[in-house]
Image 1 (spheres, rainbow, N blue to C red):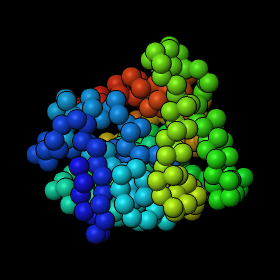
Image 2: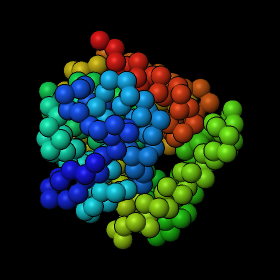
Image 3: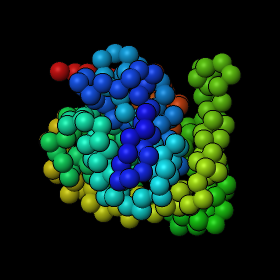
Image 4: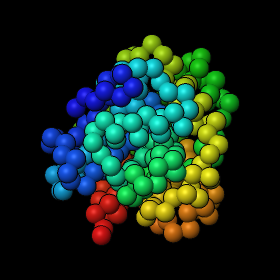
Length: 269
């Protein structure tokens, strides 16, 4: 569905069912150069098992209009404005990679709006190398190739990648290329600069009081599990789960394990 946020169309995938704000709400936030489709399995399951689902497309990503936002703080403000527009007072915030920083910052700015917080493939600080920043700015296809290789634990996920006829790396490559072609603005570079510059993560984490899950890939080269030490220290009550045979693209490489972890966490009383 489309919602007006700051005068621009904001698209939210609702999991194949009309969004009902009377239900517990789960908000899914994608990472850099991605859109709502990275959550397709998890969002459909949540929507058909008792949750109202909002899987957002950030501005200039997927079906949302507007220019890319240049800071994690601005994205968190946009997310909270989207919740207002959707009539949602409180939600489970689930973010992947850059989306995890947005969820963290939103929970830090408005603790009363976060029922639970799930940080998937997260790290803090989320440093981006100069080589990747330069590629994203000057040769985006090279940046897509670099991220695609570094985000996956294997070139052929098992079993059957994870379903017959499904090509994990190819799907991610086409999604990133589509985001690039849909918008004239340098979305990938803007996203990476925002991640690299974000400096409020530790302060935001110290204000988090809701149940928190960090869901990590053991073989993640983009956001290695060891890079969560600052957040784990600042949120001492958080639960940490690491998935085997999994890199940064957790939802594609281990979709069932991600679903099981997220739904078990979100639905636990």
